[in-house]
Amino acid sequence: MEDKPCIRTIVANNVRKYRKLNKLTQEALAESADVSNTYIANIECGQTWLSDKTLEKIAAALQIEIYLLFIPDSEEKTCVEDEKRKFEQTVSFLSEREEKLCSYVKNFFAETFLQIQKI
Image 1 (cartoon, rainbow, N blue to C red):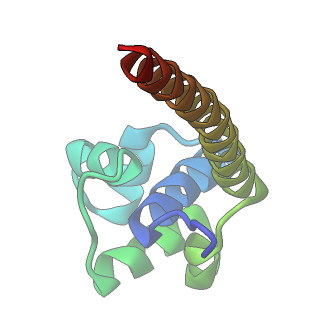
Image 2: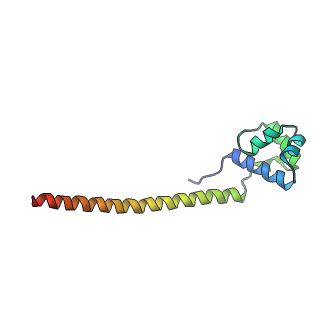
Image 3: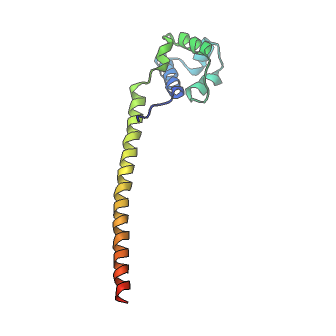
């Protein structure tokens, strides 16, 4: 199963991206969308969700179609792919360590059993 960024993260990143593309500060976007500066900051940090009315106001203030706020960009995809690659490397490393440990334990018990047989 492929990992995907959550919708809140996608919207947060897109609000930030389009705000910067429009060379707007959080304060300017907040004023244009008739919301508070803190609210914009919380949206961009993914700490809050927004209503459909607020989504419309923000899209209008950013001069974009609302659907653009829901499209993950390639940077997010790359980030997910990097995390997946790191996870696969970790699993591979742990598998190798497990094989070595199993081999060690097998040898230990085989030698211990031989020693017991000599007694």
